[in-house]
Image (cartoon, rainbow, N blue to C red; front, side, top):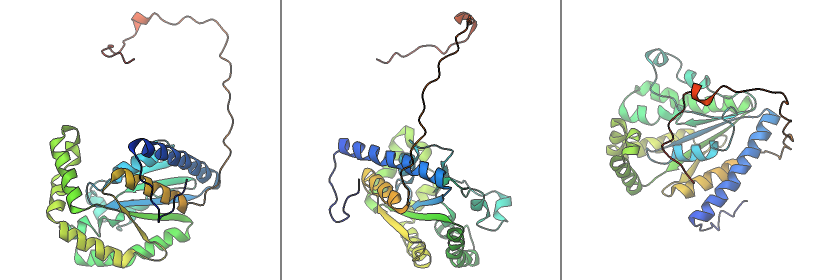
Length: 268
C-alpha cells in the first residue's frame, strides 16, 4: 500500500479509484482498532477556501461508521459562546475513547479568518498564539493523537474553483460574501498562515502541508499519511451469519392501504 515519497506514482482516474478503495478499507481497519483499543484521535483540516477540505473528509468518512469517525464543522459562534474561554466550544466536541473527530476548520479560525477580518482583538489573537501550543500539548498528554493538516492551493487554482462555484447552480451554496472577501485578501491570508505556522508548527504538534491543486492527489496523499500516523493493528471482525426468519403465518395489510412514493424513474 505504501509508496516511496521520492517516487510518486502517476495514476489514471481508474487507478485513483482503485487506490482510494484500498485506503478506505485500511481506514475501516484503523477504525476497528481505535474502537478495540480505546484510542482517541483528533484531526484538524485547515486551508484556504476551495482547498478541498470537505472532499478529503468525505472520502475518509464515507465508508466508516459515523458514530466512530465523526465530522465537526462549527458555524459562527453565538453571543454566549463569544463570552466563553475561546477553546471551550471545541472541547465539547473532542472524542471519547474509541472515537475519531475530524474538524472541518478548528480553533485555528482565530489565527486565520478572525485575524484577517478583524473579528478578534490583537490581545485575543496574541493570547491564542501563546495558548494553542499549550492546549494541544494538554490534549496529547491526555492520550489523544492530534494531527493537523494544511491543504495548500495556488492562487490560479483557487480562482478556477471559485469560478466553477459561481457558474454551477449546484455549488452556489458553497459561496458566501466571506469567501469572496477571502479571495480579495489573498496576501493577508498568506501572511496570517505563515505567522500561525511560526507559532504553532511545533515538534510535538507539527503542521502537515498537503499540495492540493489536484484534489485526487491530495486525497490519496493525505489519507495514506494519516494511516501512517496511527499505530493501528488488524482486528479480527466478528463473524456473522443470518438467523432463520420466523416461521409463522402473517397476512400483511393490502398495499392500497398505504401511501407510496410515485414511481417516476426506473433504472436498469
